[in-house]
Length: 334
Image 1 (tube, rainbow, N blue to C red):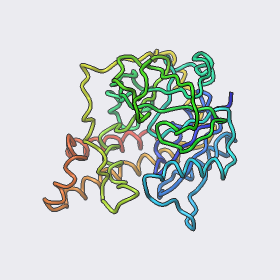
Image 2 (cartoon, rainbow, N blue to C red; image 1 turned 45 degrees about the vertical axis):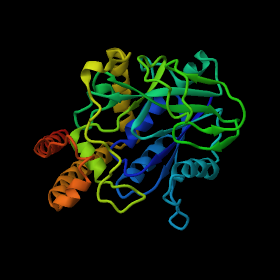
Image 3 (cartoon, rainbow, N blue to C red; image 1 turned 180 degrees about the vertical axis):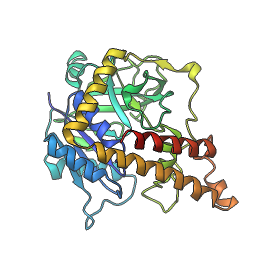
């Protein structure tokens, strides 16, 4: 089965290579990426990867015909990817760059997973929110896979089904469909969440690395939001606000599977000749984090209050120390 992955990337230079490698490894191809609102090295890195692998294709937003910044941006971008690049497949999936579709055990392909669950019209997997990915630029395989299971889901759907609307979590499809949810819970009325918070993920999950390290979180906030003029993102509830390690789940990701993943990741960098680009992208991320601290500290009290929620639980002194240490480590390994 051919499983096409649809992606939107905006200033994802430090992360796009890991995302692409992981999903290629688990059988997603082609991986089609819509690039917009980007002023970092994302395009350079994608150009190098696509030169080395024909299953990677990307589409730059046409400045003469940009997609309006509205709630329909993501569905429109997915549709534009499919139409402009002529993407064809047996199934489609749509993920953000901070979302990693994972089979239990980190070894199976998406094809074998779909076969095992009976090739439904739609296959859904719940989010897992990591609790232990605090080291700057850590890869998926650098630590045990531990996190809070979340009710939100992401979907894979049959390409021959009529799609009324590409939704970021679950497509709006015409007609009756068979749906498999890996956690065993049924979907709620919105189809973007399960009706309850699962206690087990089942045979697949989506690892949602929405925060990562403190400096990476600050760099993320500094991107702002594409549909506003705000200096910082306001759609974040604070740094790792959801974490309670007492209630986190240890997921099935054995050390040997992670070691094989990591070895392949290193080879992928060499094959695509992107080591220098990734190193530069990580240094750029550190610079953005430091600039975010300086910008926030220079704000007046009322404006700081406006941004109080996204900066909740942020320790600025710790962030600056982490930035200095991460920069030194990168330069030492250059």
